[in-house]
Image 1 (tube, one colour):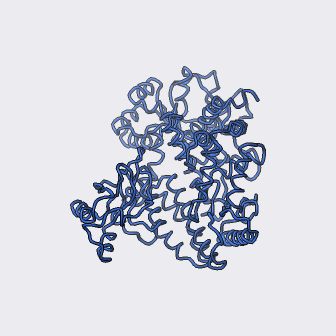
Image 2: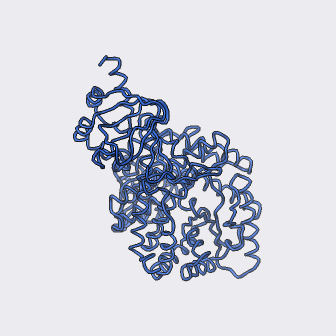
Image 3: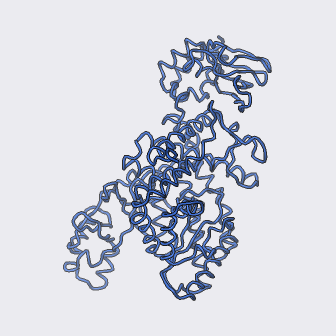
Length: 629
């Protein structure tokens, strides 16, 4: 074979998803085995269940159209450049064609003889994994590698890693009875001006070097003033497996200079210091939130929000995970909402009693993408004065109106605080939750699915915590009706994947040949919600719920890993699709065309869809849903 032709074949196989991760020498060896074959347009190449395959065909130019003799109504699959036909027929069907195949246009392909292909798989087991489980770790990493290898690697490397990975500084601890002199020596010895105050093994406070300076300036003697006298109580913490970006956003949100990280055993394992962080540059994710906090008018807020798609696109190009990206979008929305509420309070004056403003649905789960309307509610302190209720009605109406003007459109179902039904004192909210749990039918069940994922974004948070405790401690442990109804409802839906593993897409209309990725995502959202509520878990985000279910051994490690990968894939495709639509000045929606995806992306989506019957079966067996209906 001429060297220039061998070079072309080598370069081709280097781009084939099936061979990703192989050493160059192995690709070179298989390139020497390749033969070029040609099929004129509309050539019937193989017939399902009848034609033997003598090897694997890798498409160089043109394409194959795959169909089923048994059912011509099933959508045909199309294989394009760099895709392969014959591998599964060889591996799973004794070398007999699984599909009927014809060339959709003049097609050139590289042919690898069956014996050489089988020998290759024996040497590289990951190739077989590619065909049988596209959702495996190696494929998952490869599918994200192109995104991760672009942009600013340094920023991604620091911002996206977990707290426990990034923060290696030795920790300072003292006891409440230690004097300031002793605390100051601990800080001096470690050259770190921050110390955690403990009472036995429990974190009760924190002290910074500035706290000690203020104490001395106030005339308090260092030898007889104790840590418990000056420490900051009610310490803000974060789980140490959260990303640095999420920790940084929490520090900025609460005005913290240091943030302790807590491990799964409840122990302090890391501390993130503002001094450790890279400088916040113009255009960075944090700079974007700083600018939001400086907004004084709706027009300023809308102008900033309109730049969010570009910021999100930059994050993905820099290698941020889809999970971190949707959390960031949610935090941006939080910042805009807080800014709007604060500006509204300047108009209305201070509230007559304490209140918490809540977000619901995907925003409540920290899973908001670039397309969404308002889903919010308001809880205020129990009070029977009708004037107080009127004040909050007017206030909530103003807030929702301002959010609509800022680009957060009104919810068509009026699931908003401006709706009197969702602007109520705590006792009414508790009554609502109790009714939905005790009588989980139709509208009550829908409300449970929407409101039980609530998250507080403004206020002291005490009212929302009382409502959360009522749900998890009082209601969930004592109800079977709710979980029976939720699970029965959950099992009425099916994944958009046909009997022969083909995508089930819309046959006509505006979104012809497309599938609704949000619909598919809801299978994992509902699965995680049902099991988490049953176990009275406090987490609301889907990824966090899956992790906590794994920790409680309700999910195995493999189940959790596969669901987390599927969840990240769904988020990534949804975000990318929305960004592309916005760049084209088109209305955002959640319908994607599988034929516009690469072979690896389609295969991984199919593998992710195959998880849905498995998790539905898990729900069915756990709650006997559908068995006695």
